[in-house]
Amino acid sequence: MGTYKYSAEFRADAVALYRSSPGRPVASVAADLGINHETLRQWIKAAEKTEHPGTGAASEKDAEIARLRKQVRELEQEREILRRAAKYFGGRDQLVSRFQFVEDHHRAFGVKRLCQVLEVSRSGFYRWREAAPARVERERADRMLTERIKEIHTESDGTYGSPRITAELRDATCPVNHKRVERLMREHGIVGVHLRKKIRTTVPEPEAAPVPDLLQRDFTATAPNTKYVGDITYLPVGDGQFLYLATVLDLHSKRLAGWSIADHMRTELVTDALRAAAATRGGDLAGAVFHTDNGAQYCSKDFAKVCRELGVTRSRGAVGTSADNAAAEAFNASLKRETLQGAKRWPGARAARLAVFRWINRYNTWRRHSALDHMTPIAYEQRSVTLATAA
Image (cartoon, rainbow, N blue to C red):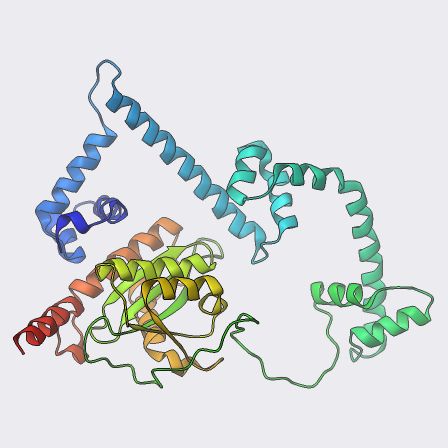
């Protein structure tokens, strides 16, 4: 792969990896990444030159550097806002939660900046703030109703669910909507006795068109760029926070052709990974099969649209059956086992990103596989292409 094909993000991450390993030779870091050591050395020099420009009169170059530094500061601020938001929401990313986050953090970042990053309307936020007194009164009424619900639930020896509790309240001349009772019981973990139901661990989009399983647990391929598997895995960082990694793994060479890390699990996480795989393959995934589980991201209309755009044929296993995507599950397990090495989490998001970045590049260019005649994924691909050309 020529130097011109390395993205700016890759070069920046490579420099960051070198700087995070004081004392390590440039050649050692370059070997981990599968690149020429002189190439990495030039990237480091370029980064130092950008960060420490010479003195003198202001120029267009100085202005551009100042602009880029401002952009970096804004991106760092945005990252800090999103980091705090992820912890603040605790898995609930609702509009009212965003408004409350703006209210609680506006002195640190300003209302305008927070609304921009969280993608909420400033006018909507101010209307929400004005409605605070009515909201406080509703919360007080909810607390009183919750206490009565708990009493009825206890009196029934924990057997009553929302329908019976609603009926009990109405008989006690407390006109209440059953949806309100359901909401309060759900929020406070009050559950009645009910028959066991099979739990679905993956829920597809309700309107998603059915997609067949084209692999049938056959995780092999006779040539590169014909069959891929993908999945999303959690990367535990900091104090109870998570990053999320989406992968696109070639079943012929076991090469990780595309991947994406983010602090969310929206559909763009998986579409970014698929587009990265397309870039690795020179923009061409036409005719390739991409097999996943039934996660909502892979069942979304946006994901289907990107697959059509790239010429990818979708394949999905059965809901709740991890064995139907065992190759992707095994890759994720190896990544976390070998990067965490017994630790429960990384100290922070930056450490996690660098560790995964380093491991993935070592995996593709350095790590040998017994299933590939003890060759690395990229070397195995190159041999396959050579043999196919000779034939």
